[in-house]
Length: 153
Image (cartoon, rainbow, N blue to C red; front, side):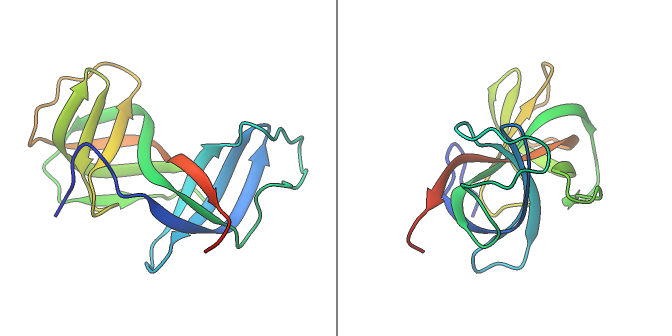
């Protein structure tokens, strides 16, 4: 069953993490699942220079949040089955075949995908004209949103 309009917050463990300024690039794994994801998120209160280690996040730490696909710069209608690929090492770049479930506005939708059991939020860089039920290929960045640190697993 897919939910639309909201997500269940999920817990993830950090397997690897890299920093550049406020940006973080991490390989995470959902607790109790096998899939690993390369994601991007912002650490608003910690700026790191090249090569500095984070004092806030490290391998093994737990995070809560929702996955989304943002910065979608390319999309097209598709006939293919649901799938997704993250082929660039340690990069949040993702290509996925999704199906539109709800249109939020000209730039934002909720979609069914092979990424999550819940609907996933998709944010486009330019206005779209897709319809509910259409399958589309999206190329963007896998983001960890609504993130918070988990202190007590």
